Image (cartoon, rainbow, N blue to C red; front, top):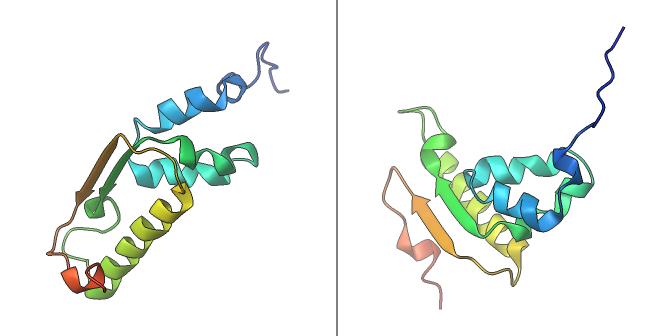
Length: 107
C-alpha cells in the first residue's frame, strides 16, 4: 500500500519565476531536459537567466567527433532561439575543440 504524503509535489507549487531561478543554477543541458517533466515545465526555459553550455557534459572523453560537436552547437543555437527576447545575465560556452568561426561569421 502506498503511503500518502500530506503535501504532494511541493516544488510544482512554486511560482514559475522561482522555478526559473532554480533552473538557472543548473547546467543548461539539465535545465532544458526538465521540459519533458510535465506540460507546465515545457515553457520554463525562457525564465533561465544563466546559461552554461559545456560540451564535456554531452560526450564521453575522447568520443567527440566533428559531427557530434556540430550537434552540440545546434543544441546551443536552438536553445538561444527558444529564449527569444528573454534576458541573459550569464553566458558560458566551454568547448573541448576549437570553434569553427565560419559557422558564426556569416555575412
